[in-house]
Image (cartoon, rainbow, N blue to C red; front, top):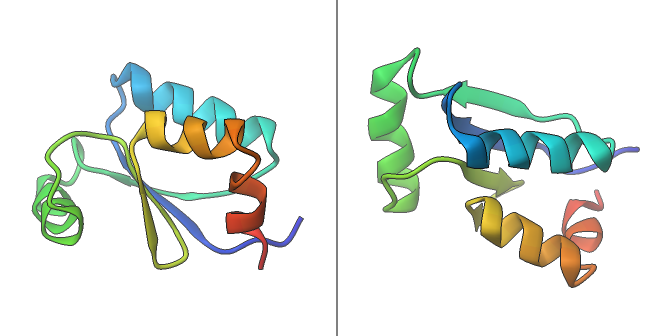
Amino acid sequence: MNHKPVIMYATAACPFCSAARELLRAKGVQWTEVSVDVEPDKRAEMMSRTGQRTVPQIFVGDFHVGGFDDLDALDQEDALDRLLAA
């Protein structure tokens, strides 16, 4: 499925990041993951872009979805597919 680019700022050990990965995988979505634990300067970039300190922080195209709860809520409302549509 063609979709807008998805970027997820995440860490390896974060359970909400794992949940977001599973949801995206289940929808057949490929994403670019920015590991803020491996590249600490990327955490500053994430905070600058989002105003948030916690992971995951997910973008679909230029739209800041937020964290896993926000992603899941969009999916529950059937709005995630529309947002992803290229």
